[in-house]
Length: 232
Image 1 (tube, rainbow, N blue to C red):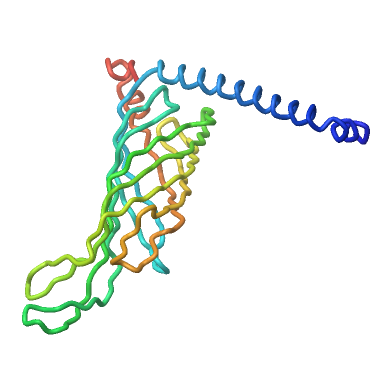
Image 2: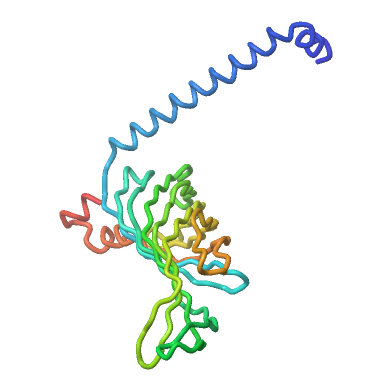
């Protein structure tokens, strides 16, 4: 090991070129493998997919529940892509101040709202008969945050602004039976464009635990001789 260190010390240019060349070859090999993998996935079976999404997070120091719905396309059970809609449960209240109809400063309780559409990609990098590990490196959301309150029987909105979110995450699921399993998701919400009219901090870890029902597998078990059961 010492003689190898002395060799690279005495031949700095050779050592540097060797290291760069090795990294380049590794990169080319990895890219070729990734390209082959993606090519196989995209030429595999294609299915529409839909899922209900429910996860926990925090807004400032308060727990905030987010629910959502995703629709997209599944390629060979390994790659998913699509769009979703996400919304905060509106359980956070705040005392806000405004100028009423008579021109006098007034106050009332308002609820914080956050809603946004998202575009996502999910990749399954490890899969067995029972376990599945996936990563969602890309989930970009566009929407708005605002306060909603009632005054003199009218529902009003304050501080509504456009926001952009980025929410990467990882998931793991375990099949108990062919049609039933357990799942867990961990991620983080980054506000790429925040609402300057709302001081609350939306940057937060996200997490959820779920019971998964695999409807396709359940359909195959229930109707094994049907046309759709054989295709699934």
